[in-house]
Length: 68
Image (cartoon, helix red, strand yellow):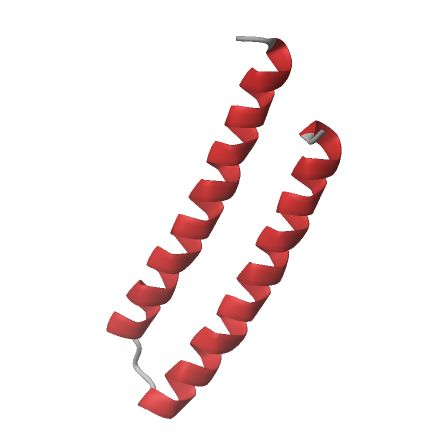
């Protein structure tokens, strides 16, 4: 396996970990939320959108650096 392939797999693992971590965090916040459901849903939606944008940005950086 070449050096480029090793870096690509490491980066993919990082992106996957970020996505899974974000999903787990969202579920945990729903389960332990002290606020009303509507407030919690708004907060989770905003946080999810923020995490999605951050993940998208990181994925684009990764592809720029290691992509074809």
